[in-house]
Length: 132
Image (cartoon, rainbow, N blue to C red; front, side, top):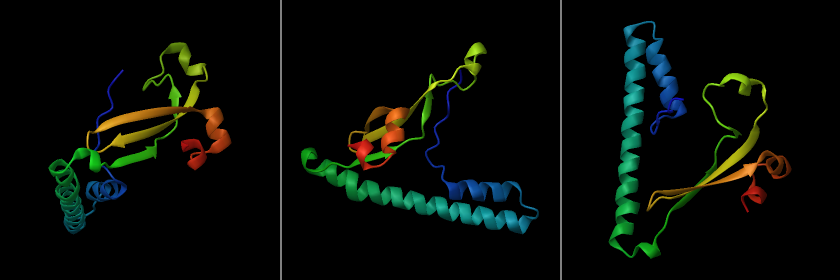
């Protein structure tokens, strides 16, 4: 097995601009794509810095119990067991599909994941009823 690398700054806009740089037919196209990508990355860095200054440091200066940022979202459905490469006979076996729902406390950076079987996802979908 191999470990999947972390991609913290990877969005669809970055992907498109990197593809434009990679497949540019001339120097002007490449320079334009690099300019757009760099501007996008600078804006993202400024937004991250603003978030840190306004939210995280404000929480650290006051009582931490008064300020919490909780983020949550559904991840893609996973098949369990999860293999990057299918070893031997497991290729022909059907695996259990689960939905992953993650909750992250931004102040402490503690993540909690909940697994939801495919049967329940089929009944409720990934909407509020499944979350509750």
